[in-house]
Image 1 (cartoon, rainbow, N blue to C red):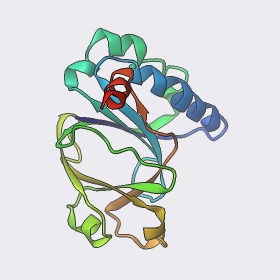
Image 2 (cartoon, rainbow, N blue to C red):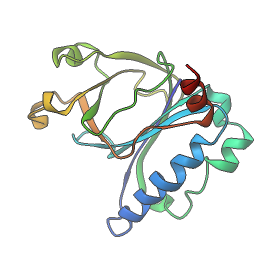
Image 3 (tube, one colour):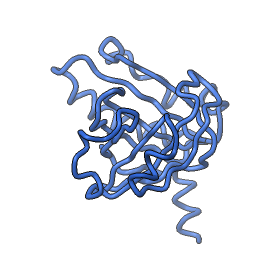
Length: 181
């Protein structure tokens, strides 16, 4: 399942420090939680959506309600909470693992359907919200090379393009099983 966390940050004076905390402390803490398989952060390049997006591949909702998540990854936000705005969390099924998006690629999301992504030459994956806010109920996710987006400002309003802020982190269990193959 894919766990999404989206938000904006309202204090430009501490935003760099917050991003360092989230990328260097929070993501590694999250990926250490049993049942988390991948984690990656993104910054929106288009408007109409929160500035930041984190995608996590997890086993299911019970991971997010468990004690290990509360101890290792669910908190630690108190210092930043007052500046976090437009915060949304969702759990989607339809994709087992989030794709790793490299530094020469973009992540692209649409809530209107797969057609806008097909029109860009991308291969969309369908996701359906099953827990938390459940909005948008359906989303399509794709990744593509940056060079297919020469003018991001002229994309349809329902397409949101994100640049990776971090490489995709994988859990120790996933790294061990990948190297065993």
